[in-house]
Length: 246
Image (cartoon, rainbow, N blue to C red; front, side, top):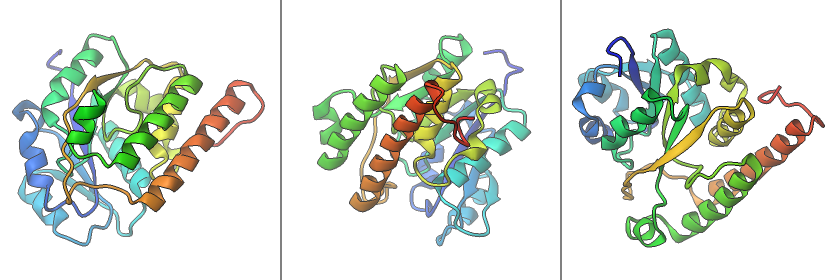
C-alpha cells in the first residue's frame, strides 16, 4: 500500500458495549488509527466506551436503522479522505485479523469490493454456532443472488466488507433502505455499476452478545432480498427504474 493512501475502519453500532473493546483490540494495530463508530441511539454505554477507546464517534439522536447507520459511516469516511473503507460489525463476530488480506485485493486492483465469507464449509459454519435456519436461508438466498447478479460469492450477507473509495463515490447508497436490506441493495448496485466483487473466508463467532436478527425479521429480510433481485432484473432489462437503481 502506498503510505499516502488512507484506510478508514467504520463500525455501525447499536448496543455494542459488551463486545466493542474486544472488536477494536482484534483489529491489527496499524488500522486502529482511523476508526469511526456511528451509534444508532444505543441504550447502553456504547458511546462512552467508544470514546474511552479513542474512536471517533458519530451519534444518531433517534434510532434510524442499520442501513441508515451505514450511510452515516460511509459519508463520514469519504469526508475524512478515505481511500479504502473497511466496514465491520462491532459485535466481535468477525475476525478482524483478515483486514490486511481483504485490503490486499483492493491495493493490487484485483477487486473493488471484498466481502468476508462465513461459509467455508457447512460443518465449520454450524460448529461455529450459526443457527441452522440461518445457514439454510443464507445458502438459498446466496444461490439466487449469484444467479441473478452473475457473481460467484460464498456469502452475500456478511457484516465484514471492504471498499475502494470510488465504489462509495459512484453508488447512490443514500437512496438505499434504512433497514437490513441496505446490504443487498448495495451489492446489486455494485454489480449494476460494474464493480468487481470478491470474497475471502473469515472466521466467525456466535454467542448471545453477537448481533443477530430474530426469525421473524430474518424472514422479512429474505423476502425483501428476493424483491431486490426482481428489481435488479427489471432494471437490467430497462423495464423499470428505482430510486437506488436509477
